Structure formats: structure tokens, C-alpha cells
Length: 386
Image (cartoon, rainbow, N blue to C red):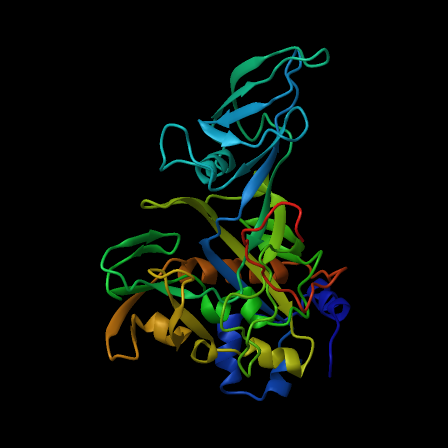
């Protein structure tokens, strides 16, 4: 019998809801009938914890006296965007310090979340209403007004693995790729990953309540580079990067346990983001998607040594997680994850505990995302042409 989100929320309220992680549900599906499971389990928690470069934070500093229209802003030497209102800014996770390329926006965000003081330096041309031209002071999360994450592209659906065919190390956002196919890196939590468990986004859309960085957050739009035209397996899983999510949440309530800065050698700064999404088991069809296991999640291995990153092989996530993949020429290549499966498991369990404790209820999307979206490349063209 099909269930509704309202019915499941009533079970949460009554304390009778049954919640399991996506890993546990996959294991249960090997022993039980899907119809039976769809009736027995109400919610499956999914999670991921990995580098998500397209992330950042909105900050309102409050007004200086006399006022300043901030037109050049740095936080601990990291450039923040000045093109908002007088004392608003957006700091991107990958923005680098003027003084240390290993330090960037992600570090600033992490330190603010952790309650530390951050140096604010701002300049402006001076106006009649905002006459101050320069300030140099310190802020922290208690002295500023709004401080919230707004991440334009998180929780990629089945990100491809990476390798390198050239004769030199390639330093990338997928880590250091050793020469001549000597390693393969990947970044996902596999069968725990949110968008792999709801591949057609039946339950995830605008307004979906999620776990974000240790507190409650929301999906606010489809993420950038949202691609639903990918070739899919029989289980509905795209074999190359597919859907993404734009998410938002109050950074003042977040924890360094689930938001961490990172630096990739000769590439730059990134930020690890912890996301958990509860998926309601609405019916048997949803249960079939939630039963997905690493053995059936297929991805491409892309060669970052060549233009366009061509695919050199496909493999399952169970193969990636085993520690090595054998390529078509018979070469056995070591694999390594960039994301943390242990942290993803922790997030899935924390989210499940919030639900059982009646601290977290499901929300139904108020708008569903496009089903025929694709990513266009940036190509050279003459001005004025369409």
C-alpha cells in the first residue's frame, strides 16, 4: 500500500516511524521482498561527505559608524564578493588568500563556524550616506548578523572516477593523479549517496528539508550543471555525473564535524560538506530504487590527462571500494576515495536519530526539478551572434 509524506510524518509524531540507513535497506532487500519492505520501512536516510567546490557563505557584517559601502573586502586575506549591498558579502569556498595559496574561503567559513575571530578589512570610495572609506577589525559568528551557507552545486549524482594516462603527475580537484594509470580516485558514498537512491528525484525538490553541515537545511533549487539527459542503467542510475542540488542552511548552527576545509596540492582550496537526505518509502517502486547496492552502481573512469577527459573504462562502486580496479589491458590499478564513507555513515545515523526523536520531519517539495536538462559547454563565438 502506497504511503504519503503526511502519513509518515504522523508516524514520526506518534513515535512509530521505522527509519533505516540506505546501506541497511540495501542489505535488507537481499533478504526480503520489496513489497514487504516498502510497507515495513518508512524512511531511508542517505548521506555524503566529500569535497564540494561550488559552496560558499552569505554574511551580513552589520553597519559601521559612520557607514561604509564595502567595495573591496577581505576576510583573513581572502577576497569576498563586494557587489551586494553595503555590508553584505558572499565568500566562495575556493577563493584563495592573497598571502597563502593553501588558505581560502573554506578555511574562513570553517573558522567562523568554529567561533573563531576573523579579520575583516574593507575599503570603499566614500559616499554621502556611507562616508567611511576603510575599516580594519575582527568579526566572529556572534558579532555578525546573518551567516548562512548557500551552495550552488552539491551532492553530485554519480560523479565519475579519475585517472591519468600521461607521463607526469596531474594535480586536480580529484587529487594527485599519478602517471601511466597508476591510481584512480573517486568521490561518492555509493549506495549511501542521496541522489543515487532517488535517481529520478521523485521526493527531492525545492523545499526539501535536509541535514546540512550538522543542522537543518533546505534544497533551494536544482544545482548548477544539472544534467538529467545522461545514459542510465536499468536501475535508473546515470553512468556519468547527473543531477545536483543547490542548498542553504544557517552556518551559525553548523559544526566543524561536518564542514571542513581542504587543500589539493597545486590545485587549490575546497570544502568538505556533509549532507544527509531522508527519502520516504512511498511505494514499492521507491523501495526498488532505495535497494540499490554498490554492485549495481556503475560509473565511468575518466582520463584527466587528455583533453575532454575521455572515458577509459567503466566499473562498479563495489570495485572502486575494493581498493583496486583492473583496466581493459589487464593492469590492476589502486583506487582511493576522496570522500569519507565513515562520515557519511555517521550523518545518516544522526539524521535517523533526529527523526526518531521527533526533531526532524519530512517536507514535500513545492516545485519539482526539470527532467530534460543538460549541460552546455562554453564555446568561442563572435560578439552579437546567437
